[in-house]
Structures are given as C-alpha cells and as structure tokens.
Image (tube, rainbow, N blue to C red; front, side, top):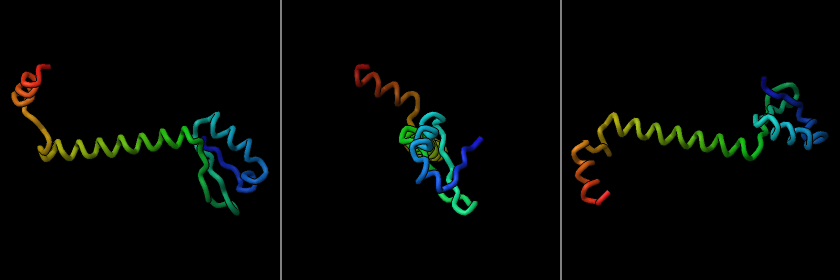
Length: 87
C-alpha cells in the first residue's frame, strides 16, 4: 500500500518521513492541497531504481541488436576467436 503524507509533514515531521522511506525501502507520496505533488525516497531506493532503469535500457539495446543481427557472432566464429585467444 502506498505511503501518502501531506506536504506539511515535510516541514513538521521530516525525520519521520526519512525513517519511513528507509524502513519501507519504498517512496512516500506527498500531497499538496489534496493533490499529488512530490515523491520522496531514500538514496538507496533511488539508486536501485536507477540501476533497474539502466538494466532495462541495456536489455532494450540487446533486443534490437538481436533482431537486426547487429553485433552477433556465429558459433563457429566465437569458437575461432576463443581458440585464437588461448582461452
């Protein structure tokens, strides 16, 4: 269930919101005048989200390469390169 707090809690209960973000590892949604306004999250949660987005971008690029045949090697070519490298 999403955590939703009014914007006044940022001023009056910032430590509580910080603890909530760290304890739940989830964002806290901040409302202003009853409407969505901000999202607050811990640094660790933000970094996980960024890493996930980077992974998705890499997977998208790999899928495009696989569909176009760009950047792929045949099994025979890969084996030739491995043997040549001494691996």
